[in-house]
Image 1 (cartoon, rainbow, N blue to C red):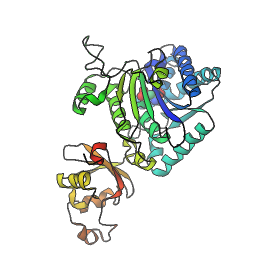
Image 2: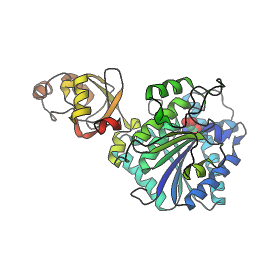
Image 3: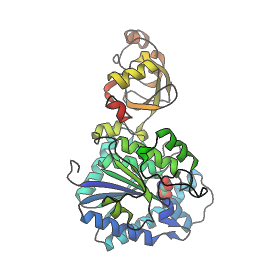
Image 4: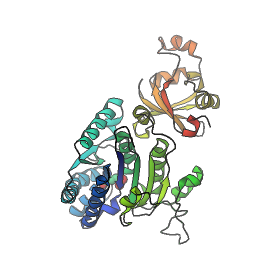
Length: 375
Ligand code: GLU
């Protein structure tokens, strides 16, 4: 149970469940509405993340290809009929839905993030079911969520969800691609498998819509590290949401790795909000992970991307693993000039100092919860 008093669930449905060549899959949407009415009657608050706008658009106007502008046009055509089905099916079950289109550019800064959070909270307070999709019409190539798996993590973070259900045509994460490998077995509990093995398995299985299994895995790992219980399951499984809510084991579960993080920490840990990356040496990584230190310019070996003071950046080790995120005190151009240098000379190099730290501890979260707890 969360601070707002009810269980909050985010359900993400993939394109292949929602739409086909003849448009919106009415039976699926009606089925979702029935299940969501049932879990709401048991006290849960539910938000949906929907895909399918592009596919529905394509069923109406047969534009070929997958260029950005084509996706924008198709999403603009398909989003309204998709929402119309949700409106109708949810109304039949006594619910009101709200369309919430988000773009990554709106959520880069904390103000934009809080603004979206307020809107979603207001919808829950009004007893409405928010239905989110990426605002594909204004998304640019660099600033797209790209797939709705990433968007679903963000929505789960924004609303402070207890659980995230990622539903697609695949019943969960398998030991190999089940479409080509008959001996593939469903992994019921991702916690039992080392992370590197999970990544290898998901990397090889690109089935299932735009995101594929790799992006579902990344989403599940990020959300569970934030204290959210995640299940990747088959959306066609009868009564899947109701059964998951009653505790039945279906699909692949990623148990939350600890208590839910604070709202601010959830934003700080958010991969979609980051503007650039800082690569640090082993000593700095150890000091950050084991000693709770701040990041000093001396420990920085490389600066990637263009960012301003106050932007959210990833901290990576030499092999490119992101182990923390935080708000940076210097713009990328300045940081590049002071990297590797002791803090005492910052003023002499830049003409003025904005403090000894490149990223202050208070503005930083570790991605791996075990590391955070000092394990
Ligand atoms: N936003 C896209 C759509 O509605 C879906 C992206 C995805 O499939 O992950 O069509």
